[in-house]
Length: 231
Image (cartoon, rainbow, N blue to C red; front, top):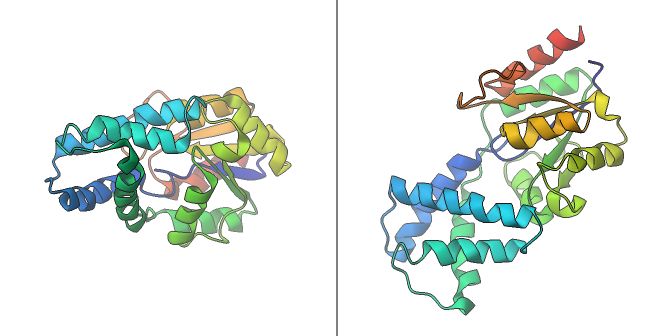
């Protein structure tokens, strides 16, 4: 494995997405007069993933998937709404979400080690350009990463292998010289390999698949993983 670049996922790889969502829901629901519960957390996350799939498949706009989440969620918490109020209602959640962004503790050290090894870095994220770059800015990673590629900018989202192929073409690196690193095996590992990249699964919560041979549970292990396979 002759690597020149490491392609990093953003949410739940560099940024604690699950934690940010949980903290945002905890801050947002009381402004609606609703007490957060584990069940409501799970419902919000399930609806988020369900409707983001439609956006990734290009069947709805990013704003529409947000509205669909609220159409499913607000009746459960018994909050009446008008269609014209949905975007404003989501802004309340979004403000709390933006305040909740946080890096994982292992990110800075891993990025330093990759730089010292002479490896370029880039980000491939299933998100929109403005929001994902805002996350990077808010958590202090501006200037510490290479190019940021988004599903919106590419016109195709993970798990389509062509997203990885397009990144490599735009980045100017052959797929065989790039290692994809991400927390979602079905989004960051399998399609990356299908596009000719190397891939490692960052399984922070030890959720598996446990038969994956290239699996780490912390970014702190990434430099050693790379050295073992390039030495």
